[in-house]
Image (cartoon, rainbow, N blue to C red; front, side):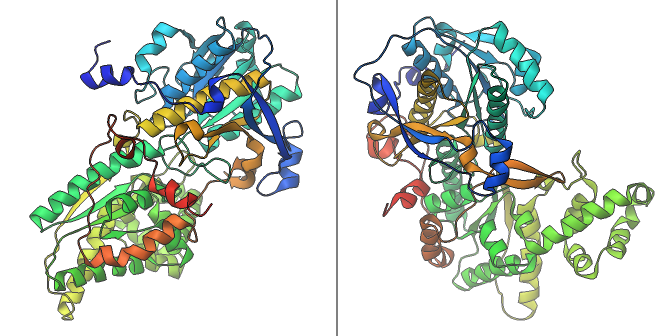
Length: 549
């Protein structure tokens, strides 16, 4: 494998471990846990793995002899920087347990587990992937582990390879599946432990015991570098408004973190829009009013950050989408026979008056996307909607109306960007390289302890890595019941931006200043070599969340 100069230098980096994990450990049990909500329902669904205690590792002065353990690992869902280091940490951890321990990687995600496609991960093979981005070491996939037939089929290969533990590296849905799998294997005494690791760049897999998901640190630093570059150009040319859409369909953590790092003129937070029951017009007017005031101050340029899932958080649009889904599902054949030129009128005539008014206010292209692009379940594919273009077009129209009323006298020219995949496979920051390696190594310690249904947990993350606290959290502790595809199902509760939380409150205290002044920060690229204050800093979200704790 040919390597770049940076790859060669990064291969030599030795991730830092919490001091407690540098020798033999023993678990210290905390209090018994319960789910965040719907306790009786979750308990009835997970009778064998509910109510387990939190675990915290401490040094073990009297370790006992150990036997080799065989472990399987799955990368599930979208990529996130640092996934390779989780596997490397897991490999080194089980080799520490016993040098004859073996690690098997299932290829292309959970599908490889069900279809018995795997490779053995050896020291020589793994060495090429240390401190690198991507999931290409074994590939990832989005097959959901939900059916008993899948569990039984997977168990066949686990028995064949004498695998005693399975580590699933994924987001909230993947770790929900890990909890279900752990419960099933426990209920049939399969003799297989299941351990989860918290992954997602969106940052919505976190709570009081999981401080952050891995990949969020690197991805937001990559996006912030590019936003900073755009802001430098913006401040140089002084003639464009850059509308920048960022990953984050279910939560606005990425947009908020990038705003804190870069100080753009405008950043929309979806959770605030929903909380205030804002209409699309109100969001547009908010942006247009800032553009008009900046023009009055002689500045016809700026940057606007927009979360990917904003459109779904606007209550009026959410209601429109819900009615559209029902309308087009019930009248699919009739709608298919309507001429393209008449489809917009057909929909307006069949919607309730409030939703018809919202639909009619949308630009032609967006309205068409809402009515034509459906996913396999018949729902609108919101990720395909170019929200950044929708907003800039509507802001442009609003400004022209303001001009006629004598309330705007400036120039408005918009450029559009969407930063998503650019951040998913970047070489991990030092923080993510360390955090991910520790998560994997910690997972090996959980396996050594014989537990199942736990998520690898490393906390105290604003301190130097040697002071991090390692242990395990029962996955059922994070669960509640939600409606999915018409049925109530147990799922890990997504973490949305807390409007009373320190990161959002910090943003609120500064955004008016950023709006009417040019306060841009240019973070620059991730630094891998140099002083700790340049290379090893966690996200501002983490810092603000920890202040006062």
